[in-house]
Length: 109
Length: 271
Image 1 (cartoon, each protein chain N blue to C red):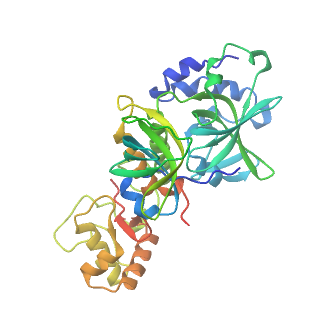
Image 2 (cartoon, rainbow over the protein chains, first blue to last red):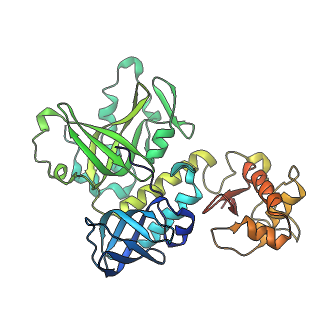
Image 3 (cartoon, rainbow over the protein chains, first blue to last red):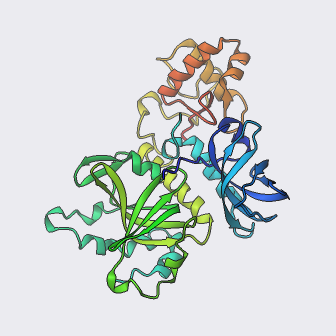
């Protein structure tokens, strides 16, 4: 099975990545049944699948598809722990490097 | 042979210390005729996309960013595990692409007290050290060491380090003159002399519109996303198509780069 590229983005990039598969690290701020809000450089609404189990205040890396309404439909989620262990500035720097030097990160279509 | 999982884990932040231990072992496996100088042995942090973009110069030489590779290191998420008789094949995905990693298992140590192997399960992030191999046009990584990532900052660290090395090899050391495209620039970015200049950049070969667009991009306050071509067109009162053409020329000249999409540009500063 092929695994397509999942560029790392944050909330401000959602508009440019509509209908694309992306990877995003954020802190879970709200859980509402089958949707949640994560803070990834701004609040992002995510639509959960049955296998996703998020917990408020924990960091999570989601892989998902950006919908037309800028919600992200989650395909997979990885728990990244609490904010004691995560350097947000480093995550932001990686996203910036991803788009500034995209030649080593993703292909444009 | 014991590669010392624990010591290499605790010292990964200390630069080359983690990688140094196993390079001599790798060297001893090479045939005398194919022996390379140890001076040419390197440990390059890379993205999986860079592995797929790597060029095979001849059978023994593969380059990334125009520079020969030997040992590589990268991080990725395990997507699939196949236990084979001589190796365990892991399919790794780092968001930039995916590749198979063959972890060669020493039969004598196969059942040794290696607790980290158990943490290498599907979905887990891990770090790999190994070499890129090409068989019948298909690439894989041959590895003797693979360990789970337990501090998620290591993922950020890896991608920033890979970016740094990529820029070092393609543009030269930070602060120095650009390695490529230097002819078009005179290195005077930092010296802003008087109004109406282009920050010391020689725009002699560019159109009048391109000069205006570049000046506007230089002088307009903006975020690091730069400016969209439609905003530039509106503010300069120039047709969008002309701005797009000017942008293409400036992109081709390496003076600006695209940010969030193909139509949003920022000045490529040699900072």
